[in-house]
Amino acid sequence: MARFPSRGGPRPPFGYPRPIPRPPFGYPRPIPRPSIPGHFLDPLKADAIVLIGASLMDYGDDSTEQAAYIQAAFRNLGYRGVLDNRAVRGDRMAQTQTRLDDVAVDYASTARRAFAMMHRPGNDITAMRPLDDTQGDFIRTGLSGITDRLKRIGFGGFAAASVTKRFYTADPAVLYNDPATDVNGSLPYNEAYVIPWIEKEMPRYASDGVAKIDAYEWVNESRWIVTYGDKTHLVASVEHIFPEWLLYQLKRQHDNDARADVAGKSFVFRCAAGDDTAAAAVDAVTYGGAVNVIPKFRSYITDQTGAVCPHFAVDIIGGSIPSNQGGGDAAIISDSRLQGAAMNTHYTYASAAESITRQAFVQTRHMGLPTGATGRLTLAASRAATGTDRRGDVVVNGATVGVLDAATNATSNELANIPFEIGDDGVLDVRITPSAGSNYAYQTSWALDFD
Image 1 (spheres, rainbow, N blue to C red):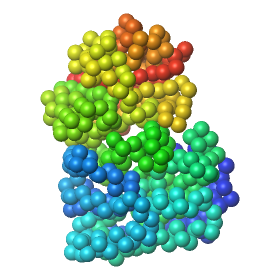
Image 2 (cartoon, helix red, strand yellow; image 1 turned 180 degrees about the horizontal axis):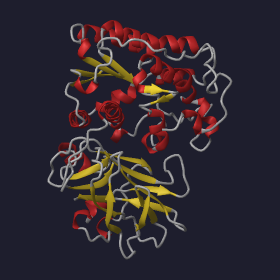
Image 3 (tube, rainbow, N blue to C red; image 1 turned 120 degrees about the horizontal axis):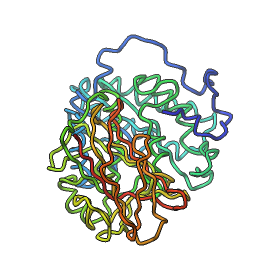
C-alpha cells in the first residue's frame, strides 16, 4: 500500500517530511509499552461491534434493505457478535463524546467484550479546512478524548480508519485531476493527526505513516463511490458499502488467512448498484440468489445453487457507477448464464478520457480465495452497435488474455473459459482498459467456474 505522500502535490508548511520528527502540533511516535489486558480484543470474537462516526456510517443502514444486508454481510464475514451502529449524521468530535455517554450506560457491564470501529473526524475537517498550524491542539485533543473515553468505559478494543477523500467543490477545491489540491482536503489531516493518532492509540491499525484501513485511498481509487452526489457522501443506492467495507478491512487485519471453499463451485455475477427494479425487488431479499449483484452486494457471495460462500468478497475498483443503458437482449453471448436483458442491461465502464465520475480502467477484485485454486473465467460486455469504439483489453492477474468487445454488432460480446490460478494473496484481479483506438471498455456480467 502506497504512503500518502506518494499521491503527489507539494507539502504545505505545516506538513513534515519523513523521516524528520513531527512538529509540535503532530502526534509523537508511539513508544513500546506493555499490552493492556483486554485492550486488543479480536473483533471477530467480540460480543458487539460498535460503529462510531457520522453520516457515512449512519446512512449505511438507513433502509430496511440496507440494514438487512449489512447484518447478513456481517455474519458472512465471520463476526460472531452483534453490530451496533451508533454513528449519527452531522456529528463532529464534540457530539461523538456526547454519544459515548449513552454507550457508557448501555455497555456498563459488557464493554470489555465490545469493540469500537471508528471513522473520525470528517465533519470537523469539512468545517475547518484547509489545515493550518492553529488547529493542532483542537484536533489532537478531540481525537485523544474519544479514545480516552473508550478506555474509561472499558472497551476491549477499538480501531479507526483514515478519513475518506473528499472532492470539495467550494473554494479551496479538491480536484480529481490535480494532486496539488489535495492539501485543501482531508489528506493533510490524515497525515498530521489521524494516522499518528491511530499509530499511538491503535498501533495494530497503522504503522510508518500508513493506515491499514485506508478509507482515503479506497475513495481515491474508486471515485464514482462519492462523485455522483455531493463529492463527499456515497451514492444513495450503495450507502451501505462504506460500513461494509470497514467491516471487511477490519476482518482482514485479524483473519486474512481465512479462505472461501470454492472447489467445484460456479459463481455468476452481474453489474448493478441498486438503480434497477430487479435489484430493488428481488436481490434485496436474496442478496443476489444464484446471481451476485456487484458492487451492490459485495460481501455476501453465493454460488450458482444459491448457497452462501463465507469469506468470499468481490469489489469493483475504478470504472464508473453501473449504468442501465447496456445492450440487454442484443448481447451476443454463448454462455446461457450470462444471456439476456437482466444480465446485460447494467454495466460499469472505463473511459480513455477520464472525468470526476469515470476512470481509465475498471478492475474487479475477487478476494478471499484459496491459494492454488484453479478454474475458468467467462466475461461479457454489451453496450450498443457502435463499431470498434467499445473494445477493452483484459488482464487477469497480470496476464493479458484478450479483447472484450461491447458493440452489439461485433462477432461476440464474450471472452470465454479464461484459465486462472489463485496466488498467495487469495485474489483474482480482472482489469479492463480501453484498447488502442477505442474510447471505452465495458463489463456487464461474468462467471467463475472453479475446478
